[in-house]
Image: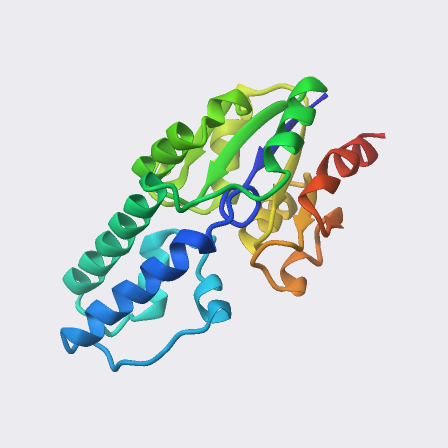
Length: 218
């Protein structure tokens, strides 16, 4: 049995259903207020920022903006996404529940670790009833937004046995590499292929994760 640490957005949650429209609404607000020039954003441009914590995202995306403006934009985007999730516009990937159930039934310990804020984690935990699957929940805000690989070092002493990191972005694979852990890269998510190049293995479908876990543990 293993301790399986899952990323959430882009790995389990089909984030673009809520993130893309919320992102575009927020960019429209910024341009309407004269803070940035108006332009259209492709899904690829938008999905690049999934996996970053929101503070890092805004600091890199529009560092020229006053910090108060960036904070207001961050809050607006988050509130917009929250509204959409509460209205039923969000969804887990098809096959996610079956995959998580299979791993849980096999006796693995499932751990949620996301670069999100506490209110985001708790909302999704409630809306998608994630307690059916996960034994523990962690997010970067609880650790002052330090990198995932450092968060792992804080939480690892609370668990016994082998760890496997599963995610779609470089933050996840970096966590495994920095801590000499097994990892599964999810190419169906939002990361580019080179972000997953150091993963122990890569899956193209969420349904392939249980078999990949079994193979890594053999």
